[in-house]
Length: 186
Image (cartoon, rainbow, N blue to C red; front, side, top):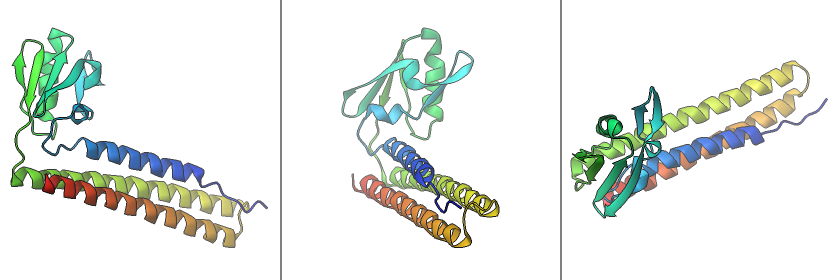
């Protein structure tokens, strides 16, 4: 009997989930213009959904302004719609194929709204981490049923999986606290 279990896949999946979460948090603006603010926006283009950066060039000409240069004139309204429907609260001003996005000052109400969005992202991340944990626990049970793991080894690895899960959730909470502080302090 081989009493070993490879946890690298679970670690890789949890780390990928946390990396995705960091990316989502970086998209929440804190009052300054940033091209990465546009990363989560997807556009209905040519019969499918595409990231904004595949139909336009995003730049930051001023500290409180983002410009989006759409490559295809027919896509301007689709890009505008995608930006308006995002949770970023931006109102594009169209000038031909150029969309200007003024970044308004963050008021207290908008800051609280951004914190709520950050909490929503955090909860989705925690759910994803718990799903990965469940997959790992199910795999351990299967290995034990097949006789490939002893009951003691299975319990040992279950404790390791739980610790990995707890550490990943704690990391998500730490990232949320930092982002919350950044949003409320700016």
